[in-house]
Image (cartoon, rainbow, N blue to C red; front, side, top):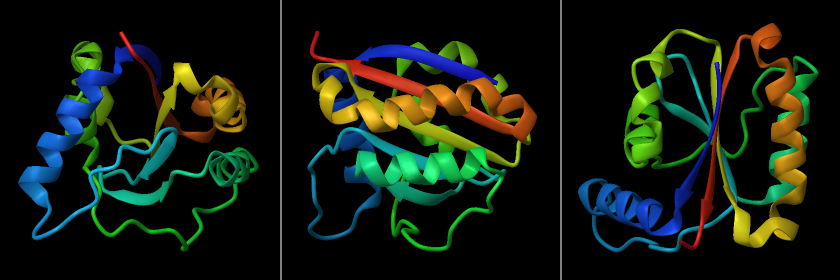
Length: 147
Protein backbone atom coordinates (compact mmCIF):
# COMPACT_ATOMS: atom_id res chain seq x y z
CA UNK A 1 0.00 0.00 0.00
CA UNK A 2 1.23 3.44 -0.94
CA UNK A 3 -0.63 6.53 0.28
CA UNK A 4 0.20 10.19 -0.27
CA UNK A 5 -1.90 12.95 1.27
CA UNK A 6 -1.63 16.69 1.73
CA UNK A 7 -2.39 18.09 5.19
CA UNK A 8 -2.33 21.49 6.88
CA UNK A 9 0.66 22.12 9.14
CA UNK A 10 -1.70 23.21 11.93
CA UNK A 11 -3.30 19.75 11.96
CA UNK A 12 0.13 18.15 12.36
CA UNK A 13 1.07 20.59 15.11
CA UNK A 14 -2.16 19.90 17.03
CA UNK A 15 -1.83 16.11 16.72
CA UNK A 16 1.87 16.00 17.57
CA UNK A 17 1.57 18.32 20.54
CA UNK A 18 -1.40 16.34 21.85
CA UNK A 19 0.63 13.12 21.59
CA UNK A 20 3.62 14.82 23.26
CA UNK A 21 1.54 15.99 26.21
CA UNK A 22 0.08 12.50 26.70
CA UNK A 23 3.35 10.55 26.40
CA UNK A 24 6.32 12.65 27.45
CA UNK A 25 7.17 12.97 31.11
CA UNK A 26 8.85 16.06 32.52
CA UNK A 27 10.43 18.50 30.09
CA UNK A 28 10.41 17.73 26.40
CA UNK A 29 11.36 19.22 23.08
CA UNK A 30 8.29 20.61 21.36
CA UNK A 31 10.03 21.44 18.11
CA UNK A 32 8.31 20.05 15.05
CA UNK A 33 11.08 18.89 12.76
CA UNK A 34 10.19 18.57 9.11
CA UNK A 35 10.93 16.64 7.08
CA UNK A 36 11.29 13.33 8.88
CA UNK A 37 10.74 9.62 8.47
CA UNK A 38 9.77 6.90 10.89
CA UNK A 39 10.23 3.25 10.04
CA UNK A 40 7.70 1.02 11.78
CA UNK A 41 7.95 -2.72 12.27
CA UNK A 42 4.98 -4.97 11.52
CA UNK A 43 3.56 -4.36 15.01
CA UNK A 44 3.42 -0.57 14.44
CA UNK A 45 6.36 0.30 16.70
CA UNK A 46 8.81 2.94 15.48
CA UNK A 47 12.21 1.30 15.05
CA UNK A 48 13.99 4.09 13.17
CA UNK A 49 13.58 7.86 13.15
CA UNK A 50 15.45 10.42 11.12
CA UNK A 51 14.85 14.16 10.77
CA UNK A 52 17.88 14.86 8.58
CA UNK A 53 16.68 14.65 4.95
CA UNK A 54 20.08 13.58 3.59
CA UNK A 55 20.41 10.75 6.12
CA UNK A 56 16.77 9.78 5.56
CA UNK A 57 17.49 9.58 1.83
CA UNK A 58 20.48 7.27 2.41
CA UNK A 59 18.41 5.07 4.71
CA UNK A 60 15.49 4.82 2.25
CA UNK A 61 17.82 3.94 -0.60
CA UNK A 62 19.28 1.16 1.55
CA UNK A 63 15.74 -0.20 1.97
CA UNK A 64 15.39 -0.08 -1.80
CA UNK A 65 18.48 -2.25 -2.09
CA UNK A 66 16.80 -4.74 0.25
CA UNK A 67 19.22 -3.96 3.04
CA UNK A 68 18.11 -4.81 6.54
CA UNK A 69 17.05 -2.04 8.87
CA UNK A 70 20.11 -0.44 10.49
CA UNK A 71 20.36 -0.60 14.27
CA UNK A 72 21.39 3.04 14.74
CA UNK A 73 19.07 6.02 15.23
CA UNK A 74 16.48 4.00 17.15
CA UNK A 75 14.02 6.44 18.64
CA UNK A 76 13.55 6.79 22.38
CA UNK A 77 9.92 7.90 22.18
CA UNK A 78 7.96 8.13 18.99
CA UNK A 79 4.28 7.78 18.18
CA UNK A 80 3.14 4.31 17.20
CA UNK A 81 1.90 3.86 13.64
CA UNK A 82 -1.79 4.08 14.69
CA UNK A 83 -1.01 7.24 16.67
CA UNK A 84 0.86 8.82 13.74
CA UNK A 85 -1.96 7.99 11.32
CA UNK A 86 -4.58 9.39 13.73
CA UNK A 87 -2.87 12.81 13.69
CA UNK A 88 -4.16 13.42 10.16
CA UNK A 89 -7.82 13.46 9.20
CA UNK A 90 -6.69 12.91 5.59
CA UNK A 91 -5.49 9.41 6.58
CA UNK A 92 -8.66 8.29 8.36
CA UNK A 93 -10.03 6.68 5.21
CA UNK A 94 -6.91 4.48 5.09
CA UNK A 95 -6.79 3.49 8.78
CA UNK A 96 -8.29 0.05 8.28
CA UNK A 97 -5.90 -0.67 5.41
CA UNK A 98 -2.90 0.78 7.20
CA UNK A 99 -2.42 -1.98 9.74
CA UNK A 100 -1.91 -5.13 7.72
CA UNK A 101 1.32 -7.04 8.09
CA UNK A 102 3.98 -5.71 5.74
CA UNK A 103 7.54 -6.13 6.89
CA UNK A 104 7.93 -2.38 7.43
CA UNK A 105 5.96 0.84 7.10
CA UNK A 106 7.75 4.03 6.13
CA UNK A 107 5.90 7.10 7.41
CA UNK A 108 7.40 10.10 5.65
CA UNK A 109 6.48 13.65 6.59
CA UNK A 110 7.51 16.37 4.18
CA UNK A 111 6.93 20.11 4.16
CA UNK A 112 5.73 21.52 0.83
CA UNK A 113 6.80 24.99 1.97
CA UNK A 114 10.40 23.74 2.42
CA UNK A 115 10.68 21.91 -0.90
CA UNK A 116 14.41 22.57 -1.29
CA UNK A 117 15.18 21.27 2.19
CA UNK A 118 13.04 18.16 1.64
CA UNK A 119 14.24 17.30 -1.87
CA UNK A 120 16.62 14.43 -1.01
CA UNK A 121 14.04 12.73 1.20
CA UNK A 122 11.19 13.41 -1.24
CA UNK A 123 13.16 11.91 -4.14
CA UNK A 124 14.01 8.79 -2.12
CA UNK A 125 10.38 8.39 -1.00
CA UNK A 126 9.20 8.69 -4.62
CA UNK A 127 11.59 5.95 -5.67
CA UNK A 128 10.63 3.72 -2.73
CA UNK A 129 6.93 4.12 -3.58
CA UNK A 130 7.58 2.62 -7.03
CA UNK A 131 8.99 -0.56 -5.48
CA UNK A 132 7.00 -0.79 -2.23
CA UNK A 133 4.92 -3.83 -3.16
CA UNK A 134 7.98 -5.76 -4.39
CA UNK A 135 9.71 -5.07 -1.09
CA UNK A 136 6.64 -5.71 1.12
CA UNK A 137 6.94 -2.18 2.48
CA UNK A 138 4.00 0.14 3.08
CA UNK A 139 4.69 3.83 2.38
CA UNK A 140 2.60 6.57 3.94
CA UNK A 141 3.64 10.03 2.79
CA UNK A 142 2.19 13.18 4.33
CA UNK A 143 3.01 16.51 2.71
CA UNK A 144 2.21 19.35 5.08
CA UNK A 145 1.62 22.93 4.02
CA UNK A 146 0.85 26.25 5.74
CA UNK A 147 -2.83 26.58 4.90
